[in-house]
Length: 351
Image 1 (cartoon, one colour):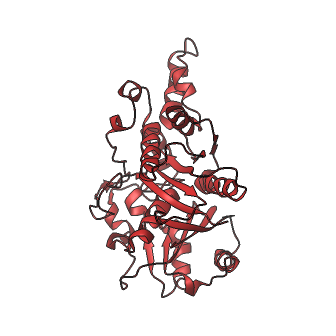
Image 2 (cartoon, helix red, strand yellow):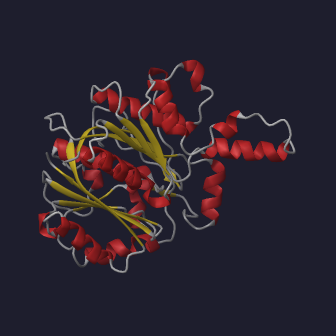
Image 3 (cartoon, one colour):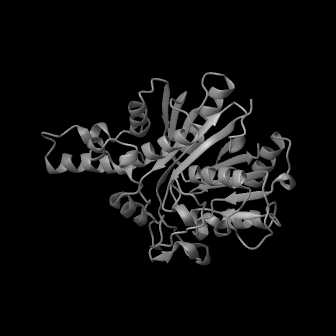
């Protein structure tokens, strides 16, 4: 069964939310962390509820509701999210209160909202949706796992109009810890010159991106999600890519555009550089993490971006790696890995 992307919405460090332009009004930031540009949440959430919601919950609800609105769908057949860190702000608040109040008289709200499935649950509560609801916490392939689940539901005709999203927030505490572990750069860098540096570490990011998947053909569909594959510490990612494309009766020559997960960390980007001299040689390449930063579910931003590229038939200049002629891509391959362990391949095609 074919799987289509009916609509998509994204809250990110760029002007991506309900914007009339597609990645033309680029935000430059100098530092080691990119913060999401938050929309006016009062359009999507009751103001009385906003003050009790953490950053990631508000981003998730806004992106989910916007995605449904664009598709003219009031009630999704299922809600599935992927997140590696979950509601970090509420988790840290609860743990801090345990220490400060010596484990006595702890208010329960922060604990209740600290669970990873809070975003999907809050979306369902606001929509009064009693359909299938699930959250995947699979580190660097959390969003891909959510997509797999949605695709299986569609193939088994268990649901249609499935809302799938990847959400992640960056808070001061987690940012400090991950910087100490060497994930982020020690010195400020402009996100627009991220790939010009040759140092270890990248820039942190956050965001929420949702897509509405359906099995119904329509002129309103943005693109087709043709294939999806995940690999854990593969011996040869080149063979994995070739086998993946072959399973869909395609070769590397059939791919018009390859979007990679380059993030400016010399250790992270080594595999992309090697592929650039082999199967990716002479191919149109694009990158995206200089716009959204690095986080475990950043591939959701890439899928949002790709579906719009295919629908519009235009590749924004800010994404291009090197110079190549303008093309209207029909088959796009997204290849991303997280910390060298969790690799994912997504094949997105024109409808």
